[in-house]
Image (cartoon, rainbow, N blue to C red; front, side, top):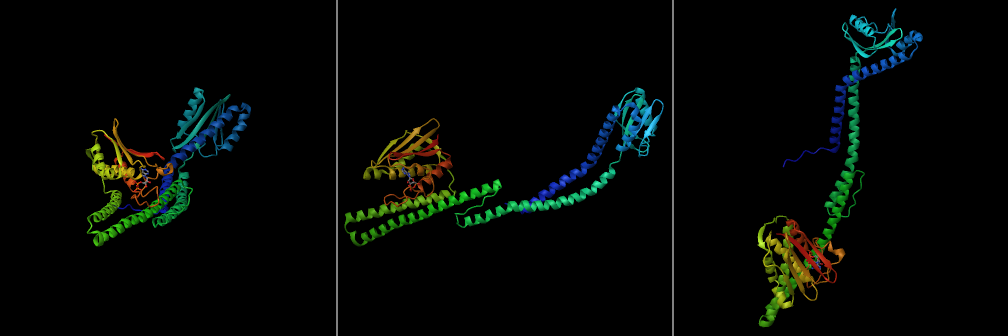
Length: 458
Ligand code: ADP
C-alpha cells in the first residue's frame, strides 16, 4: 500500500489557517463593494428621514431660520417651496442644484398631488449622479430634503489597498498562531511518543503526563493501561516460564532416572521393569499435555487458526472425549455423570470444540472434590444447546473469578506436583468460544463446586 505523505503538525495548522484567512479576505474583497454602497445608502436614508421628522415638528414661523442650520449641520440640501417663492439652502454644496428638468417635473408632480414623499431615489440623467429625497408638507408649502449619493468607488480603491495590508498582517498572525497551536499540541504528543518507546522497550511502569487536551489525555490514559496490562502479562509469562521449565525438568529427570534403572537394574525382572516403564510413560504423557497446551495457545495467537465450520453431533464428541478418561474411571475411581440427549447436531469448528470440552473436563477432573465426581450436561434449549461441566471441588474465589480466563493465570501460584498447571487451558477456551461468538461463563460456589458452561447455537 502506498504510504500516506506525512506533514508536521505546525505546517499543517499553518496551511489551514492561511487558507482560512485568505478565504475570509477574498469574501470580504468581493463583498465589500456591495456592503459599502448598501450601507452608505441606508445611512443617508436614515439621516434624511430623521431630518424630515424634525421639520415636521417645527413651528411654521421658525422654519425659515431652522432649515438653514439643518442643511449646514447635516450636509444635506434643502429646498423650501412656498406658494409664493422658493428658497434653496446649502446651495454651495456639490449636487444641491437639482437643475434637471426631469427632477423638477417630479417635484411639481409631488406638489400637485399634495402628498408627502419618503426616500425617493433620483437620477440626474445629465451626469448620472444619484440622490435621495424626502418631501415634507408644511402649512405654506413643501420642504424637500435631499442628499447626493456620493460615488463609493473611491472609498473602495482605498479599501482595496487596505485589504492587501490586512492580508499580510493576517498571514503573519496566522504563522504565529499556527506555531503556538502546534507547540501546544505537539509537545505532549512528542512526550507521549518518547514514553511509548520506553514502554516498547519493556519499561512498563511508566507514567504518562496528563494534558489539558481531552484526546491527548485519553491517549495517555490508554497507554498507561496498556503498560499495566503488559506488565501483568509479562509477570504471568515469567511465572509460566519458571513453571514450565520446572514441569519439563521434573518429568525429564524422572524419565532419565527410570530409563537408567530399567537399563541397568530392573530389565531382567518383568514385574519391576513394567512398573518402571509405566512411570516413564506417565511422565512422558505429562510432558505431552504440557507441550500440547503451549502449542495450541501459540497457534491460536498467531491467528493462523481460522474456524473450519462443519456439522457434527455434539453428544458424540463429548462421549469421545470422555473415552480418553476411561483409565481414570477404572484406575482412580473417577465418576462421570453424563446427562446428554441422544443427538445434538451443531455447526462449529469440531476440533476446536473438542479442545474446549477437553480443557473444561480436564480442569473439572483436576479440581473436583474428594468424591471425584464430574458432571457433564447438555441442555436442549429452543435455539441452542447449553453444555455444562460441573465439579464438586473447593470452587473459585469471587476475586479470582474474573482473572481465570487470562492467559497464564493460575489461582494456585505454587507448583503442584499432581497437576500440570499452565494457566493456558481456559484462555484457549475463551479464545475458541469468542471466535465462534458463543456465550460462555462460569458459576462457582466456594466449598460446593464450579460449573463451566457454554452455549452452541443449533
Ligand atoms: P490451568 O488449569 O492449567 O492452571 P486454566 O486456564 O485451565 O489453567 O485455569 C486457570 C485457573 O483457574 C486454574 O489455575 C485454577 O486455579 C482455576 N480453575 C480452572 N478450572 C477450575 C475448576 N473447575 N475449579 C476450580 N478452579 C478452577
